[in-house]
Amino acid sequence: MPFDGHIRSDQATHAQIPAGVDDPTLRESATFPRSVIHEIQRAAATGIYDIRGWGAKRKVPHFDDLLFLGASMSRYPLEGYRERCDTDITLGTRHASKPVHLDIPVTIAGMSFGALSAQAKEALGRGASAAGTSTTTGDGGMTAEERGQSSTLVYQYLPSRYGMNPVDLRKADAIEVVLGQGAKPGGGGMLLGQKISDRVAQMRTLPKGIDQRSACRHPDWTGPDDLTIKILELREITGWEKPVYVKVGATRTYYDVKLAVKAGADVVVVDGMQGGTAATQDVFIEHVGIPTLAAIPQAVQALQEMDMHRKVQLVVSGGIRSGADVAKAMALGADAVAIGTAALIALGDNDPRYEQEYRALGSAAGFYDDFQDGRDPAGISTQDPELARRLDPEAAGRRLANYLHVLTMEAQTIARACGKSHLTHLEPDDLVALTMEAAAMARVPLAGTDWIPGRAGREM
Image 1 (tube, rainbow, N blue to C red):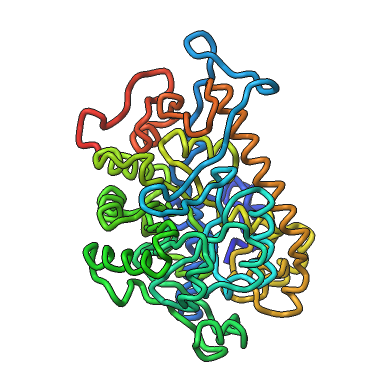
Image 2: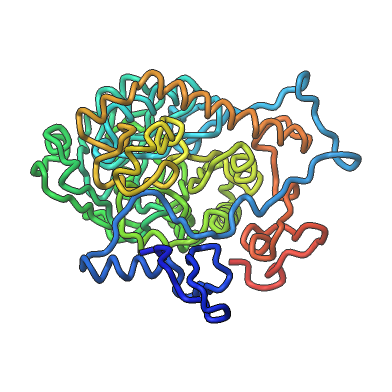
């Protein structure tokens, strides 16, 4: 538990003084800070590991460690009110007869019905459609509300096969074969029994109220050659119309992207360790995978070496929060980004108006991550009918659309300042890094120098 402010003796004055976090005589251990002490005490008391939602909370090199070089003399900026900066993107141009065309390069990542309420899934569809972009199903199948409100819906094909059926597959606009998630690459999903309602159980053909653990790998293939066969099967089921995405958690990204492209992917989705989850072991979230910033250059290098960059589109997710993040990911070589956690926040997750209820759950607004418990007062990560009804899908969808609109305008603002008439024209030359770590990972110069750490050595 955190230090409780009890009375301690001051050896210099022998006076009794109240001790607390501001007491300069107290020295907190860097190896055993209060958060670590608390976790050891919790584990000792319960004998179980911690499960939570959200992505990695540790500080890692991220987009904040990059800056844009705006135009002046050597580059010519564009006028914001008179000169266009386009934002549209087409995904799946390699093989599909009906690739996905989006108005903006910000998509909604896969989040399952089960992890989220039906109202939240509907709101994601409404918000994405209003902004001219796509949303994605998740581990649990396609709900009628989501399909009905999503102008462009990507259907995830997961190791668990929960909710998978060919009828829904054909209703989708694209298919995403999920091999891994950034929050838990190499691990399967969790949905605890308190969130297995009658409807969730029916869609997943599993018992109500029983904890479900998804498989960590697809049961019908063991390598890229088998994946090639599976992708061909999916193309035949959908008449070669739908683009097939392959999603990987960021680890050995260079090799995974090459193998995904070799297997026939139209689009590769790379999810960094800051990507969210509804429920996974904390030790997994914080200690497996690599930061999004480190994964993008590896993916781009793999595509470039195969002469597939911009032919197989790259979608990046994991910690995208602002238009600056969108622009930086695209400058590093992504064709589009996907958001998950930020989309839930836009819907109303961790809203301060539920502060008292978050406190009653032992958390606070801005900190709540116990999505696995199903007691989300915002009505988003729950299957409790009373809580879920708190979320108005229309109002939440409007908030998401507003947020997506802001992300796009912010990215346009930066692109114009760099002299670019389309977001996809942003390039690594527009970026510098504030730290050596970020410069090495992003493969852009340290600010004020032309030095890219590691450039003379092995590049991956």
